Amino acid sequence: PHPAHEFCAAAAGGGGAGSCGGDGTRILIKGGTVVNAHRAEVADVYVEDGVVVAVRPNIPVGEDNVKVIDATGKYVMPGGIDPHTHLEMEFMGTVTIDDFFSGHAAALAGGTTMHIDFVIPVNGNLTAGLESYKHKAEKSAMDYGFHMAITKWNDEVSKEMEVMVKEHGINSFKFFMAYKGSLMVTDDLLLQGLQKCKSLGALAMVHAENGDAVAEGQQRMIDLGITGPEGHALSRPPVLEGEATSRAIRLAKFINTPLYVVHVMSIDAMEEIAKAKREGQRVIGEPVVSGLVLDDSWLWDPDFATASKYVMSPPIREAGHNKALQAALSSGILQLVGTDHCTFNSTQKAFGSDDFRKIPNGVNGIEERMHIIWDSMVETGKITVTDYVRVTSTECAKIFNIYPQKGAIMEGSDADIIILNPKGSFVMGAHTHHSRSNTNVYEGRKGKGMVEVTISRGRVVWEDGTLNVAAGSGRYIRTPPFGYLFDGIEKSDAAYRASLRAPVQRSKAAA
Ligand code: URP
Ligand code: ZN
Ligand code: ZN
Ligand code: ZN
Image 1 (cartoon, rainbow, N blue to C red):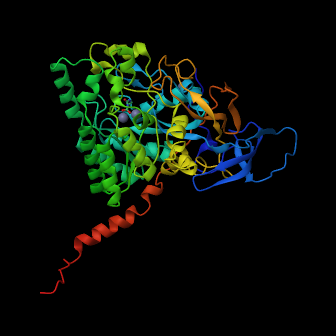
Image 2: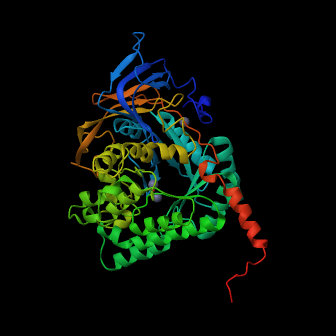
């Protein structure tokens, strides 16, 4: 029998770690450049019982039971927070190969200390879905939160959403506009869901692709005899992502509730987000690492095992989309970086060897995200070091309302900290990664920057290339509703209602 499914009580609410996290470890990180999203400064960081106790220059090395780490010439930053992962998810007739232990080990080795995973309801039932994910997360080795997918609609689901927010610390719900016949929702459901999210102060998230058109596109490819992995990209082009993104944004505008678009993979989708933002709408766009640095040429590789690794939805796009997404991240059109870590090994990918529609969708990234964003965005001068912290950690903590417990190195914050050596370098691949997958979409990728130390709630879990993780040590982080994206929504609703009854303003133009 497993332990009772009770989340650590001390994790409730934001701000400050509880007694269950710390194990008495004291750490003093000396001489590094401490980077928060709002400023970088040379300072020491003192950690006790899983919490940051002091951040200032020249903290004296006092007692001898303090572990001192020299960070001179290195960056001391909040651990990464991955807003988008799928650990041990049942999907397309199989289960993702990384669970809450191997996924966490991989994350920690790559400098990520928290993630938010998507609970999938069981036959549409949210409570059963949550029970199942609580059980999966018993082997967790780092802190985690949950989003909840909504896959069907009735009064019970509507009531359960309220229970999820008020009792279980879930403040975000994902609607899949694709995966017809399994997870896909109709516009009718999406509208109901947006309305409910708004009333609960919960963030609506969308997987934006037109699922009906995707099904049509898939049949078109099969009719043409295109059954290989390239058929995946050809069957669901950017126009279908742009259409669904635009539709979701407009429906969210009609309801007047914030919207979070997950895995923005194309210029088409990004432009819809840019346009809505220009008009003042609260829309968040999340690019993922694969979309930022890969291109779809891999899908044409004659070797099925190679090509099928790159099958994910929406598809990785042709070269050009990636650079445009990077530019959008630099300029703030897109705000934070996820991975959509959803890993299947080559045996699982082979389920679709004669029909691309059966290739389980998903790529790795939870271990690679921090290094790839550093190398491709900071090393190239596209974003600053403070922006790096913002897009990999702080923005996620703010959106999901757990800042500054997470996403910052400040007095009272959880001691989730990484030390990155900008003079270091990395090489990625299946032989050295910590994921259980036997493949890696970043195989052979080299770059600058190395996460040398990862501290998870005050424990050094990654140092000198060695992992020291414990199953069951992770803690559920509740995400409270009514995060900053909801500030002012009531006021704009009131202004809208007033405008409906206002007398018509006639033009005063001179005759
Ligand atoms: O291909 C993907 N993205 N697999 C994970 C499920 C999803 O759509 O996020
Ligand atoms: Zn259990
Ligand atoms: Zn998705
Ligand atoms: Zn996903």
